Length: 379
Image (cartoon, rainbow, N blue to C red; front, side):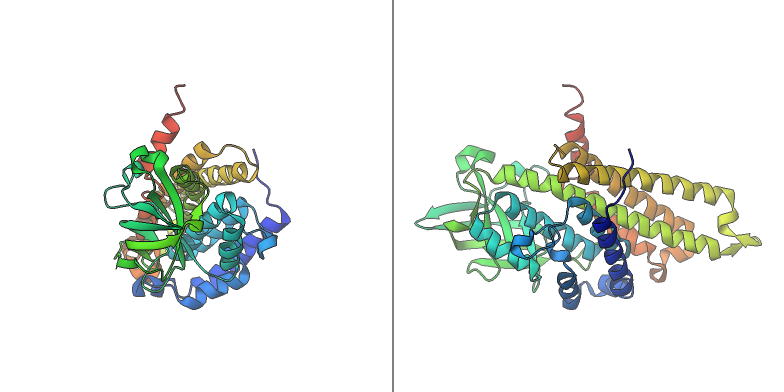
């Protein structure tokens, strides 16, 4: 099987590559150090169309396919994984409205995405990580409203000043378990909805990841996405698409670190010749290049299947597993290959290694991905 990019896909890939190199590469270390993505970066991405990649033309977007999302996320991640994370999660939220939202919700939130507003997705709770069915946040009907109470944690794209709306998975009929979960959109600034602790992290330090607190938060019942009881299904479908995005993020991190190592090994002289002339080192780089290519095929395959309307849950799990494991392995080896310099911030690979670790954990740990894949093997 071979993958040939269409003209549109090749164009968006080059656009993302140029943006990442000109806008992100010069400030990626600063984003990591200051733990914030400058507002103007989000604004520039909105102008280019990155916040609306999957938004239909009817709502002002470019209506690009999942492969284009993968290309953009991976190119951004080569330079700044924090920025790539924002787009990966935000486009997941766009997909929720596209697939399950009412026409009024599409008009409001997909148009907002075109304008550069950023969405978040809230499923995880202090007692409900991999076991998402253990979530306890409740939404009780009160006339024409829902009253939401509960806490969400580790929520991407929401911080003290960033994030504009969030899709919350809450129990509307607790006695039904997962069949009683619903998806409800809550706008920033809604009374009773507050941003709690912004997490201090090992990696993707520029990305906002925070605790969300709901205390008698009242929202209209019109904010329900889909039907009551659809929330768990919506969440699982969103995670399938999100895993393709995280796989692409991991792929980009791996590619970026490998390229830094390649350039370094060609320039660094030891024992009278460039390090790349040492067979042990050259073989190691060959192994990493093969691993990256394997991950790329898995990520692209999952993106193609999603875009073609085929079942893609298993491919998404494989893509996430391969892309993120490649990120962790390649960045760790890149630090080793650069020796003492690899440990220094000046050479970036230490930051990329820190960024890589979370990709093996969020959007379902890689152990969960093995559960998903193994569950299909013996039927």
